Image 1: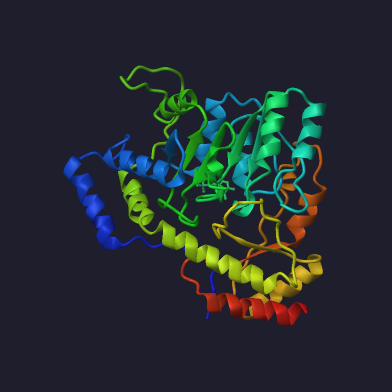
Image 2: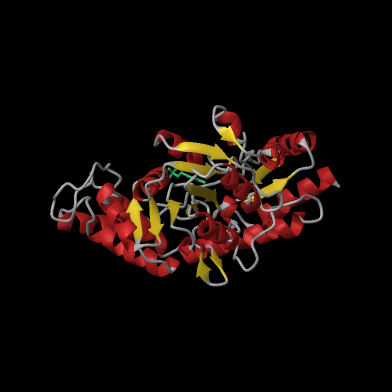
Length: 360
Ligand SMILES: *Cc1c(COP(=O)(O)O)cnc(C)c1O
């Protein structure tokens, strides 16, 4: 039986239709309609944040955040989904890479500081909470204060993650979420930006509506990045289930970690952070061991992905690289195992037993 790497959550059709009927009744299909307002409020309460702006996808969330914060020159991580870096390049922002931490796989604050010391024109750090594991937010806060740079977190993996009861989304000048169908919570396509400052939120709200202000006056050149009412209906439908989804995923994640901790390495999690079970990464000893694992998974029709690979400094090879050693190595040796809501603990045990047999 095939086990897929991931499977989008299926919204309850009865509930979804109920919301869609409300759209027909109001005749308001997009442009910050009633469902958009409801979803915004409910997400702010659920996530424990303020200044949350819904947008049409996680990539535009990043791009609008860069625009709202006037980013000109950014330092980012080579170990992330391609959108973290490609969004900067697309926006015409000067972009450079520095290395990740060997234990956490997140952008390393010490390496970032070295890059800032060498180039004082860097005005922003864009760091990803890789696999939902929070970056070293305290060290980045220090860096931001000492070097007068913005911190933007690509939090596409970190929905529902807190550090000691404080949302990870409340760190930095802005954090972005993706609500793509493959993420732990989704609106088919969609995303959000959480701003630290109300003024940035208000500017971004105009920017995603062509630069138009509340009474229709044009303030500056914008883009169209609004989330429509149909997609908000999917979000509202799934939000009722999100506690179950996150706790089921966390349970599978812990079953994996328990089963595998003696045989493979895994990223070291931020102290005090909860698991959202967004991904299940394991680190193999070397490329040969990775290929052995891949062949066993293939044989049993268990899907996997080398994630993240290649290291983004290899893809965008004309960009400046301050350091990349760990990213180069981990992109060769890290594999994500299947993890989604429709899997069971016995699926996880079956997979961990296969890996144990192969690697012990
Ligand atoms: C999914 C993802 C994105 C892009 O989000 P979309 O909604 O697909 O545009 C950006 N960064 C990371 C780390 C992601 O995983």
